[in-house]
Length: 103
Image (cartoon, rainbow, N blue to C red):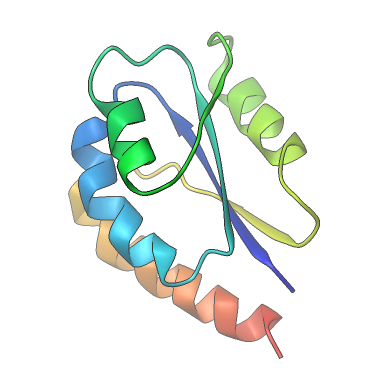
């Protein structure tokens, strides 16, 4: 089973530099829904070979649901960590989840 990581973003460049490298170890697909970043978010994503879909911000829940609706079949994780100090916990949980859904 494939693991899709959904990332709702807005001016998330600083965090993406730290979050994307370990996520690439476990994710088969990224779905990024950006709500108009003005920083280097989109440039960083391109550097990792990840595209983004633009969607104007409405509510956080609607952004997450829209991102999930763009995901391919398989297990979907929506990453909402906003601080780098949450990365280790999120990474460990994703590795555990990836092991449990893959044969």
